[in-house]
Length: 271
Ligand SMILES: [Zn+2]
Image (cartoon, rainbow, N blue to C red; front, side, top):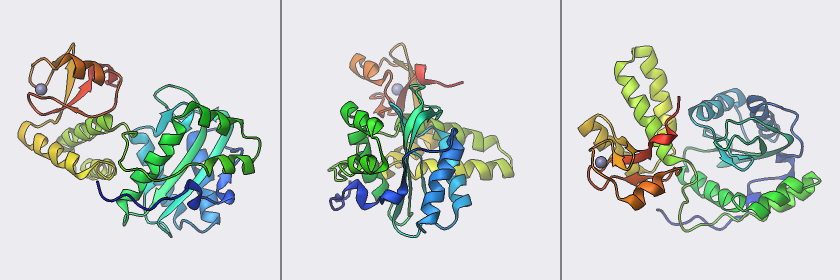
C-alpha cells in the first residue's frame, strides 16, 4: 500500500449544491443521471452521457449497493478535477439490486480521474467506515434538510492507513474469471465488449491480486475455486475448517493453502 494521502474531510470533495435532499428519480439509472446532472451543472464533469454509460456498465457488472440502504455507484473516467462526488437521498428508496435486497435511501456517486487510481480506494474506505455504523446511518436517514444532511456527511474523515475490503472482491474475481473464459469462445465483436468489462474490473483490484490471478489463469485455465462442503473444488483437498466458515457469506479473499486458488463459497453462486 502506498503512503496514505493527506487527511481530508469528505466535504472537501462535496459542496452543498452537490447534495440532493430528495431525489426525484424512483429508479436506479434515473437516480444516477439526476446526480450526474448536478455534477454537470457545477462543471465538475464534461461528458455526462459517457460517464452515465460507464457508471451503469459498472453497476451491471455488480451492484455497488453495500447493504443497509446505501449504494456507492462509481466509475473511473476523465473528470475536470481529480474527483467528483454527488450525494442523493431518497425517502421512498430505490431498488439497487442490493445483496440484502434492501432499498437504497442514500446514494453516493463518485467519479474520479484515471491519473490517481489510489484516491478512490481511500475515499471508498473512508466512506464505508462511517456508513457501516448503524448510528451514523440513522442520523443520515433522519436528517430533515439538505444542510443537516451535509453537516452529518462532513463528519466523514478520509484518512486510513490501509484499505478496507468493502467492495466484494472475491465475487469481482469470480466475475473476472467468467469473463476471461467467455472471451476465449467469443467472436471479435463479443471479445471487444468482454475486454471492456475486464478492464472495468481490473481497475478496482490490486496489482498483486491481478498478478496472482493472471498466473493462475495461465497455469490452470481458472483461478477461482468454490468451496463445497469444506472441500476446495480446485484441488479436492479439505480447506481448514476455520477458513471454510470464514468464507461462508463473506466477500473477502481467501486462498487455498494447497492449490493457491482464490476461494469462494458455493452458496454465492448466481443464476
Ligand atoms: Zn485448492
